[in-house]
Image 1 (cartoon, rainbow, N blue to C red):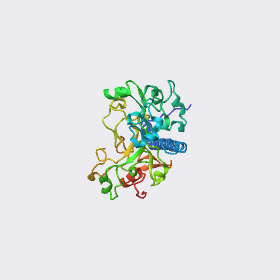
Image 2 (spheres, rainbow, N blue to C red; image 1 turned 135 degrees about the vertical axis):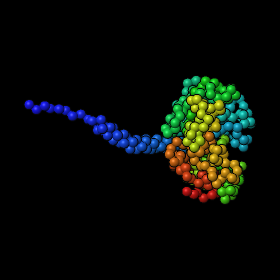
Image 3 (cartoon, helix red, strand yellow; image 1 turned 180 degrees about the vertical axis):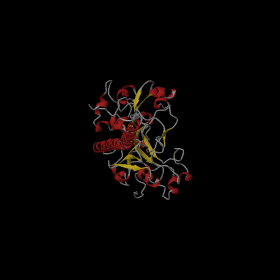
Image 4 (cartoon, rainbow, N blue to C red; image 1 turned 45 degrees about the vertical axis):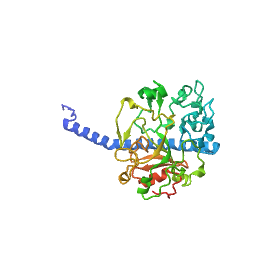
Length: 346
């Protein structure tokens, strides 16, 4: 009678199989990550598309694109901002106008009108965004305002603010954040323009303003450089955290910040595209221009995302584009200004 024996895997064979599986996983993982990032990038672009469409829907009703922010308006702008005038005031002083940002103003146009009707009286545009009556709405998370690639939970507590800031905004209040900011102007330092070989468009003129300007409903005809050539909204992700060149700078527990920054309803939700120097600071002197950083340099006031190689932007006509990190400083700054007179490049 024959004896039947069963042969199992030897240790060497087992190690070979494990090594092959590890290699296959190593090959597959980058592909999975790329697919995941592509999906996140597409979702981000769709969010921006919806915001751009909302701005134009509002323009169709009001005859002007929404203000990037409403805060401390000049006397010349007050007449067009009566809907933000505080009750019981004459409307003759800057302090007579409630503080808001474009994201709050366009809520009805992104099918979030329900947020403006929260319990406790709803959202009152004649009171500051952080007023007690507005806290329920301002504390509501809006997915359309969030990029899925951002490594941040999209909320922070006002308890992390300085004592002075807590006196203004209140303590122990959780605020949801946004990754998309209105671009309200380009670099306003003449030396930067002339160093690039361009004519200074006038740092105090409307030429330097963006498609969405502070304290103004912008008429489409004011964008003389062309809506398709001028940036309206851009990513400035992960605020209030401070990110520079892909690294978290001066990290605080839980994404805390000593000053108000990043909340989607915050009236400071607009940025000026200035470009950054090596330290992440605003371009201010001629020596900074040759080595200027343009995109994904610093998220505190510049175009910044967590997409590989660039960031998403929404142009004045509502189209969404991916701006490469290699974009030239000249192209970036001229696209941020609505009437600088320079032809589009790149």
